[in-house]
Amino acid sequence: SLDSDTPVTATTGETAIGGLAADALSGLWQQPPVLPTKWLYDERGSKLFDEITRLPEYYPTRRETAILRARSAEIASTTRADVIVELGSGTSTKTRLLLDAFVDAAADGERPTYVPVDVSTEMLTTTAEVLAVDYPGIDVVPVVADFTEPDLDLPPADGPRLAVFLGGTIGNFDPAARAEFYRSMVGSLSPGDYFLLGTDLVKDTGRLVAAYDDSAGVTADFNRNMIEVLRAGLDARGLYADDFEHIARWNPGEHRVEMWLRARRDVDAYFGVLGRSWRVPAGTEIHTEISTKFQPGALAEELESAGLSVVSAWTDPAGDFQLTLTRR
Ligand code: AVJ
Image (cartoon, rainbow, N blue to C red):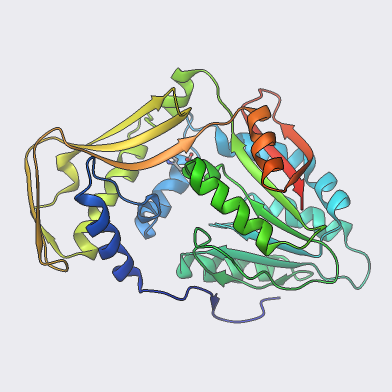
């Protein structure tokens, strides 16, 4: 059942637009310009991402789903968690595999609690309502929060809690941000709690780049939508998504795919909300996303050194993606 009609808001600071204005101010005038990845996920961006997960070139979602299908029962029996907290829950599609397993594993009278955490209130509310109907044996307690901000308060539990961070979204963090994220995660967990992490793995560069530069152009639209978010959110004149070209390239030193937006022509834009002009020459590239790919050994090392002991690591048969179960 759903415990509340509206999600709990755990964010404290500024409004969404305030955040965008601050991020544009601090990012667009940098060399090279950079914008936080989270601004890709307005309503249209979230729909485009959903479309990406079904593209032939974009393998991570299918691979992770296959691993969850094979391992959810084992995750439920190993952790025996009664609270499952999902960071960046989105539409919670893959999570259903986990929830099914926890319902199956629950003893009579036990009610697992599912806490989806996301920045998008609309999506969270809809998802929570649907899940509450589909899972009468589970308490659904949505929380609106930006989990990139430190020290999320997890609901207390009698038994172990399981935090899950799926999709390979940890790949959006650079090494310093990952260390900070693990530190914050360890701070939110109690000893004996579990953390389940989905990561994409290093593989053939051609396949990696194709996954972020699909032939249908959906990822290009997803990336360019960041310009639309800026235009609408900051009341911009002279800023057009079509003036930017989608770039996806492999950075071998940092083992990550990077997304950039390259200006096709000189840009002379004015942001009403900022009261500022932004002028850059053709060819200027704005950095919008990193998607880090991991090596299993190095990943285990960084988790262990953060205080998260690796319990199990599972890959799909092709070895494309990995789910790692850790314990504080
Ligand atoms: C949602 C962060 C896992 O990095 O693969 C997909 C986002 N960006 N295509 C990823 C994304 C371009 C995705 N994550």
